[in-house]
Length: 216
Ligand code: ATP
Image 1 (cartoon, helix red, strand yellow):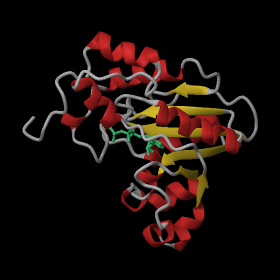
Image 2 (tube, protein in one colour):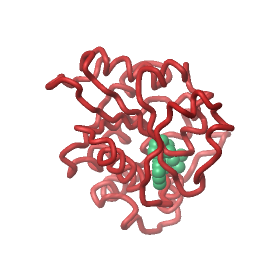
Image 3 (cartoon, rainbow, N blue to C red):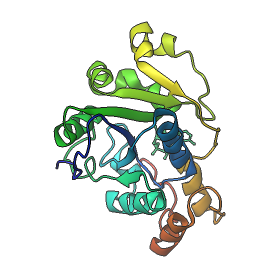
């Protein structure tokens, strides 16, 4: 399904932030804000994915819950938006398909920035058609605690490395995995995710059964 956004001006600078968002947390929000500020983006669009190509179905909460939580997480920021473009498309969520869907929707005077954490950008060689993605969007990456300053040239090769733009953000050692474990252990989510997200998790009883294992 095409993203429902309308082009308003020439050379619209738009950040795309894909993720599982299971649940969304301040690490995601701080990364998006660092990119928005550094690159003077008019908007950052969060894209909860459907079935991630690298994660099996039993590991990931239903997309509608992840979408609802991402909307709650972004609600107070005037330049953050959430799109159903990836989760409504059948099959695996490929970033290149998403970039092209936004190009079709928003027109040729669009500059797209594809925002990722360092743990994601080191996996770029395994993405679907990475070189086309690097041509059609500016890939932007920030360090993340646990994956700080890897040798990107060695990992990606010089040509791909030259096309990745690095930005700085205050390091936040927060992950969806840690938040899910905290809920399972009955621990606090204060100051790790916005309060409405924590309230949604509580209301819907998410993550209480813990991480499912391969036997399901
Ligand atoms: P999980 O622990 O479930 O794998 P996650 O916290 O890594 O989840 P994702 O939805 O997989 O969250 O991440 C979406 C994007 O946000 C990725 O590009 C990831 O690198 C980035 N990201 C997530 N958390 C942080 C963080 N604390 N700092 C910087 N980038 C982050």
